[in-house]
Image (cartoon, rainbow, N blue to C red):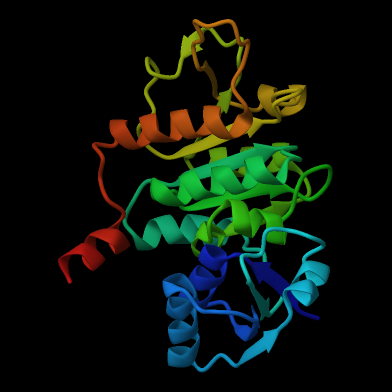
Length: 256
């Protein structure tokens, strides 16, 4: 069994991460600077490169925008919730976890993963059923960020929230009708940010297991933001309230 990743940024980030890349399939034709960078990286880490027709890549990706490159990789492994908490502990940081309740749009999932990785979150939790999983489209939308952020898949979100609360994590749900605005809430300390689907929001049982519900205020004619945008707004407010602290790994890299 193998997975496919396509698109230049996702493939490049997969090769830069710890994920095993078996080989690259590259479309025939002239090589621009971006493709040359990909091929140089493949050469550095010993990934075989095969040239093929663009039509073959179209068939493998079912007509997706592959940008002339596809990576054949080892199957993706989901993390455990404890792996995410351990990541925060290793960085000596309060956990910041994003819990997604029935997000079915792969573009919303990919965009949230991209923002979560950008602000230094420690991981994502998604339900096993009735929700999008980690597909090549998620790789593409996240621009490769999924390669650097653990994603755990659980069978019961409410039980997972209870387990997080027992470990001192404050569960905050993003709910459009909540009276507390996100920018007036205390978003410091260990946090699990719960984001629901754009159509139905957070499910009732999941909402009841949150410690606090917050909303993003709206003043225009549109009644709501999509899940990725709303979640991203709150994630940046959490980072701001944390004093814009850089994750320990990023801080060390900046000093080297």
